[in-house]
Image 1 (cartoon, one colour):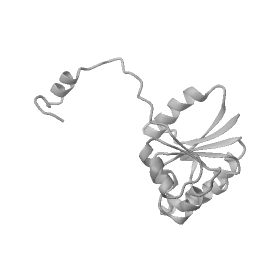
Image 2 (cartoon, rainbow, N blue to C red):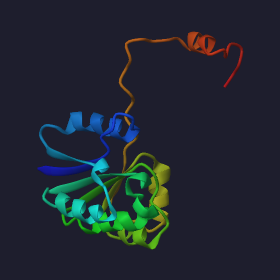
Image 3 (spheres, one colour):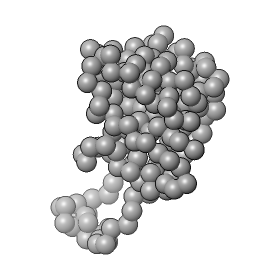
Amino acid sequence: MRVAFFTPTRDDCGIADYARHLLRHLRPPLDINVVPAERLESVSSYGELGRAMSAADVAHIQYEHGFFRRNDAPAANFDAFLSAIHVPKVVTLHCLPLEDAHWQRHLVDPSLSFLVHSRHHREILRARGARGMIEVTPHPAPPRTARRVSPSAYRSARGLDGRSC
């Protein structure tokens, strides 16, 4: 199966870290084409990139408002992007959709699937009229680090001795 995977790729982005972790577990067997969110250079890029993602069997989109902010119109830009994709779509929501008519039309599309990271977000999507499948998948635990610090050593190193959280 060929998947077009829209995601940021920068080193200083938590969503990019999440995507890199996810890709390690999806390849193989999936043939994944990473489509960097940073490629969006102008408002016209949203539709062009959406059409390009239709070359895959499935489009998986990592969504955060900031990826669609050109001309300060994230809902309209996301609408142009999603409307240009003509294969099944899965949207991982890292924030809730904007309450905007451009977004609302996608929420009521029963063929659009969502992946969220909390039951609370699923409940909000359903309350806003989402009709497609909504899967709740918590963020994975970060990889273990080689250096372990006890809670008391951590508090001491940060001047928090004797304080409770």
